[in-house]
Image 1 (cartoon, rainbow, N blue to C red):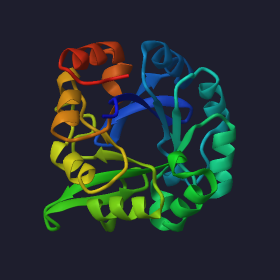
Image 2 (cartoon, one colour; image 1 turned 180 degrees about the horizontal axis):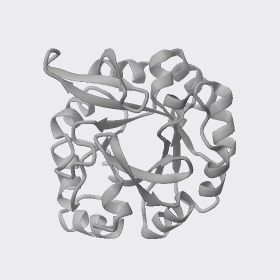
Image 3 (cartoon, helix red, strand yellow; image 1 turned 120 degrees about the vertical axis):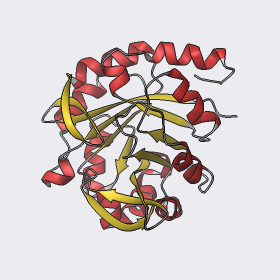
Image 4 (cartoon, rainbow, N blue to C red; image 1 turned 45 degrees about the vertical axis):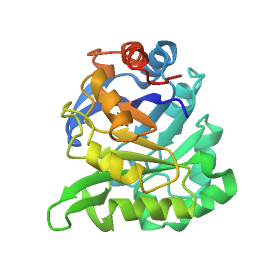
Length: 252
């Protein structure tokens, strides 16, 4: 039984951490380097850093900020946004990332997942999936470019394809739940978790400690990610972990 992980997420735009609701109406949440140091001390299991406008703006991830954040961390660190090649991955891993997260680029060029897994090992390759429910599909559809563009992919099928190509982990964000603080999308999380053999990180919708418990018990997630509730001190990593321990969940 693997221990469950609690992962704060830094959505970074123009060098600042931001947070919105359903990917829009972003507001400032602080300095990424300061927040990274804080979460490392707080007992976070990992940290995710997403340069949320890199793909949309067609530019590379901010390597200098990644270096500064990595210097503060003793925990695994995943970086995503604007990664389009093996060279981009090398640059970020050299800058201190432990894993790279592919989203838009992987959908435009699925071979990139395979090439990254072959070169660095599957454990370094995270495929991030932004999912939105589609009535006509009766399921969830994959979106790219920071949630701006709809694709033809159904989420579970794309998750399975990503794993087949070499993804070592899936970071699954419910766009419908993002920033709403009403809980993770358990049906979505369960659908993907039960369809793939690699760890799934639930993302989008955390509002309180009990939501993490539901993600693990009902959603069968291996890890759960949150942003605004940690950034704005509505709860803390420590509080969430102690709540989960009380409920008998094995956390690190």
